[in-house]
Image (cartoon, rainbow, N blue to C red; front, side):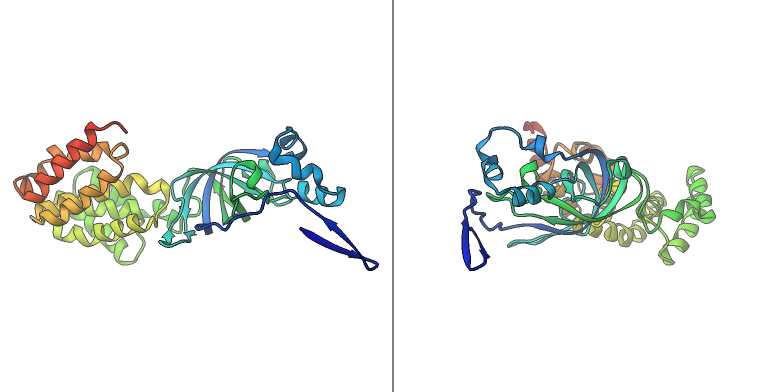
Length: 317
C-alpha cells in the first residue's frame, strides 16, 4: 500500500503484489565469478505473458510501472563462482557461500554491457534479495542474486585476480618445477621451501612442496603445509581454479597421516569424501588400494571407514 498526498487530497493506490515474507538466510559479500553467458533483460518482453504473477505490473500507474520496468533493464548472467568471501546469514552462518557453484545472477541497469563481461572474470558485491512473494528486481527473473559494483578482472578461467598470479614467472619456481620432473626432490624442496618461507607459494606450489616431501619419505615436514591447505578447504577459501590441487592435497594429507600411523586423523580426512561420494569417487576408490594406507589397514577406524565407503559407492547418487 502506498499513500500519496497532493494538495491535501489523499490518493490511495493499492498494489496487488503479494506481501513478502522475511527470509531466514541471505548471501552477501564479495565474490569473483567467471561469466559463462549473458543476456540483456527486456522487461516488456520478459513480463508480457498473461500470468497472474505479472498482474500487479499491469495494475501500476504509468509512472510507477515505468520505474518498476526500468529497475529490470540490466543483465542476466550465468556464472561460476570462482572465489567467495560472501557470508550466508542464518542460524549457522556460512563463510565462502556459493564457492564453486554455477549461479544465475542479475547485474543492475547502466553498469556494464554483455560485451564487457561475457567470458570474463568479474569481481562484485553479492547482495541477495529476499524473493519470498516479492517482485523486486531480480526476483521475477528466477534468481535472487544481484551483483553490485562489478569490475572486470581479466579473462575467465585464468589466474586473473589471484594475488600470487606472478609466481609462474618466478625463475626459482620454474627451476623447482624442472627439478621435480627430474625427481631431484632434494634440490627442488630447497627452492620451494625458500619461496614458502617468504609467503610466495600459491596452492599449487604448496601442494608440490608437500608431495615432494612425501616422495622423500618426510611426511612430518609435509603435514604443516597440508594442514594449511586443508583449512582453506574447510573455509572454502580458495579459487575454484585451485580445486584439483586442494583435492589432491587433502588425499595426500590422509596418506601422510596414515604413514605416521595416525589412523583416527587419517580417517577423519577420508570421511570428508563420503559427504559427496559421486564427486569424490576417485579419491574414495583409491583409498582402498593405495599402499600408503597399508599402515592403518587393520586399524578399526579405517576398517569402519572402508565399510561405510563401500556402501556409499554402491548407492545411486
